[in-house]
Amino acid sequence: MLVRVVIPPSPIVLPEDIAGVDAGDTFVEAMIAAVTGEIDGPDGWLGRCLGEQTLEAALGCWPRSPVRLPYPPVIAVEEVRYFDQSGTEVSLSDGSFQSANGLLWLVDGFSVPSLASRPDPIVIRYRAGYDENAVDEGGTGQIPAQVKQAIILSVQHLRSLGKDDLFLRAEEVEGVGRTEYTVSEQAGNIIRQASDRLLAGLRIYA
Image 1 (cartoon, rainbow, N blue to C red):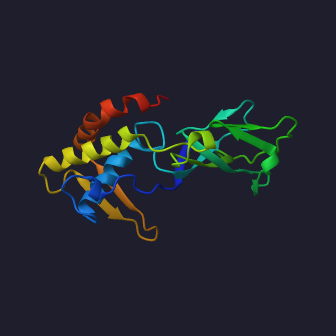
Image 2: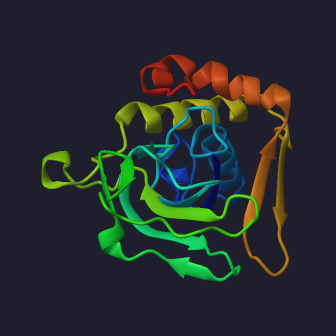
Image 3: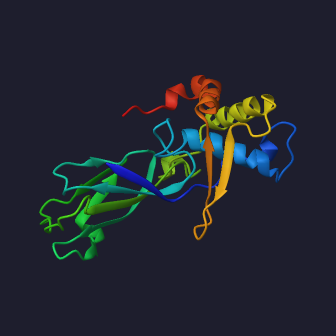
């Protein structure tokens, strides 16, 4: 199942959360974004979403059984749409599907439409991550404390290396406005070693 981020999460750790760092330190902001990107969402190794974000999962055919949406916790399914036989994109009515506990399924008796002959003609848009609302009130809860500590620890470890570049690169994507952060394999190993024990209990294996 192909999953992409449509709306990325806001930072869950700020520069001022790092000891000895002032608010607005752009270099530390870049380190935080790189460390978080190594962990969070479809591109991270943890297998779950941390900050609240919007994802789209693509399917190749109508499911015969409930679909478990990847990268939990799932906050809500926003839309299910598909390309019909003529290639027109159509949204399913809310009454055609149900969702709960990270699962999505078609209601009994729903007659599935024919699909266009194209890769992944069905798209599920959903919000995932920790929304800071209590679980017993229908939310997904607060971001686990060990997540923030793992990010802080990893950033502190990178800063301690004393390298000007810290194996970090930031680029502005023209026309998109999103800054991409990348780390080398060496820096990725440092991040994982610094956070692995803290996050081991949260990891989801495919």
